[in-house]
Length: 513
Image 1 (spheres, rainbow, N blue to C red):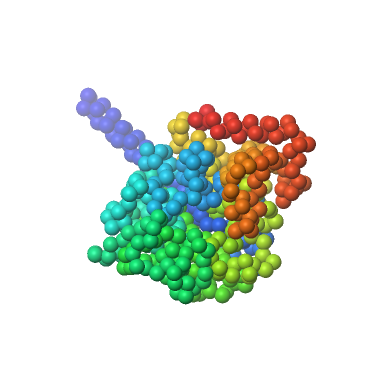
Image 2 (cartoon, one colour):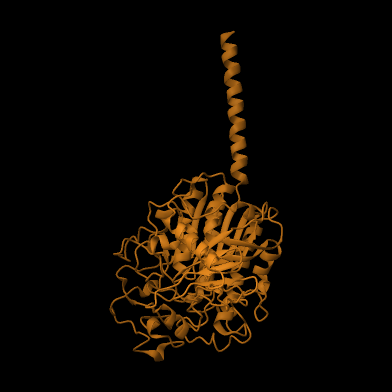
């Protein structure tokens, strides 16, 4: 009798455990894949689905047709490194004094810090970053001929294929996980941002070798007919060809997706397009009316189409959350004489807003943002306030991952927006540039800067972008003044004081509570 009772208990327990395991497998299988398409320097008005008439972006338009197009979504910063930092950490970049990094900068995100990819790893995801990095590598003394670490793998990525910094900076080589790709034995690679090294020609000394002229900052070592920031000695065996970026990135993304097997995956697809230098593939050269910048937009759109076609071919497109956005607003002239200004014509990259990349004005951070998760998210358009810093907490909520008190402290749970169940956005939001600005509904407050700051001169005179900075507090009502041309700070001193205090309180925040 006892043995029969024991057998019954054993069989029952085994059955229940089996059911539990099957249920867990169903839950695991149901977890959506996540892809973030992170375009570089793409403006609010650079897509046909956002009103552009001089360039067509059918693949991104298809995302918008089948997803949710946000009209008041923002990168956290008006420049690239800070935005990337915030996206991956859930923290505003000012907390780490993050700024545009040189090509030999140490890893900006501490391996001890919680990150978006680490959180997703805990949820059972395979994780990868493919494309532009620009968050630093190593500990400040990189040997490019050995293992380059710490890097993406130390902050939560299982796989990485990178431009180590960005296309206009050396080293002009690919880095796959820890190693420079294709570097031949004996072809020692060295990098310097302080003085010339090696015998590679420079743009300053040999302008006749250039495809197009560059400003003094971008006139150092010449690779692939383009001068870069910084000096690179050796490494000829590993040099990239800029026109190969799209095919390389798509190929690596495809291999990662296929290698993930049955596990859900997170792919941070970080474009180089449409950042300078703009050297699109032959099939896109001259295909727009706007020179290389317009051609690069077409190339970016093609790349999106390639990845989406891959998802459809694998039958996983409907179980994949797709987030399409940009790291900051647009810039036309950013160091190279590539005819972008001359051929801009009637195209408005800002979509009618003021400023652009580097600027405290709306076009600095208001960027095209499309969310697709069929059939969860209903297609349409939403005028809600959304920040890229919120992607971290929103995904954690969707996946039932509890965040620590000091993890992603600036990230708000807007999972209802990602899932399409509750289209409610933020009430307040920081915009970072050379100063801090705050959105509260359609009020926009820009904190005053020190009178000795030189940054605005560089933006206005060199980049031809309104910097939006002032030694006086600025307040705008975007409902009636979307171009931020009428400062009403003196008329609404209480509103200024309130929003100034909100920024101060955010600066002091040190936990999620």
